Image 1 (tube, helix red, strand yellow):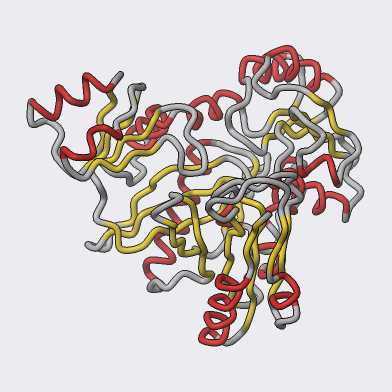
Image 2: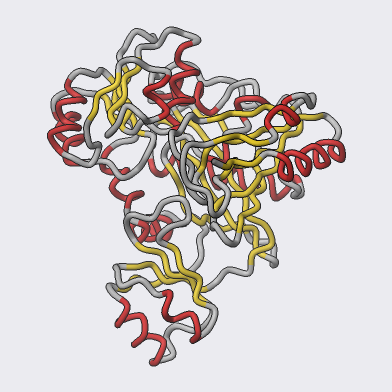
Length: 379
């Protein structure tokens, strides 16, 4: 079952954590990325230097693998299509990956398949956006999302009024009304080739407004049981209608009116599932290996309450990272620090994460506050 060689396009921290999970079963993994400084190279010796956006690099890498998957969306799908035609197993399927790579096609998919999402229009450039504003077809506030290339908060502009128009990107975009958000939620769901599915509990995400990145998440989310059931059902519908094999992270908005809307998805392990390593019976990384190998899916049951903090590079620091306050934090029961091993810190760069686990919901918040105030990435 696990004797097939799995190739992963991308060698960042998601790949590293996937490799660590695969080692428990001695699953042969290999990676393709641009540098041996990538986190995955530190735990997996079978590492190919190359560009996952280059046709030849992806095709030649994929030829040596039995199964190919991703840890980043922006890969060369033409090469993946040709590998599928030659009998290689590729998850997620290149056709669906192309839909997800383009936020405009994503939104059209939700509309066509009756999956709840916010209204939108697609425009080609900054001039078209301004014309629509002048024609009263776009009103403030609204959100502009670049159709392609956005990642970790990049490629998104929140335009609250005319003073923000200089933030507009001159690129093909999705334009959405600014949703009246009560909470931001996420659900990780998995599916194998046999169509078996497994869904994790909903988590609640709190974003850093300055960095536009997840600052921390809470599991379980502070929502009603009816809202929990609705969020899980929406995620299940999404992966089934996409016919996607592997892991799908579904980011959602809970509006102040109580509606749950899909924001966007990621067809890979996701920041909103890091806590599953320490707080669930089966981590999202083990689940990925199970799903793409067409093995039985693991239990998604949570074992405790969890808060996950992203460990970001401090503002005004750039260089070889030092983790200030680490000793004080790891002496606390239930504090699990995961350092990715990146060679350079930059402002707001993801350098690691910390999961805090505790059965007591008040005590866990106090521990998280201490870690957030104490553990810093400096140079």
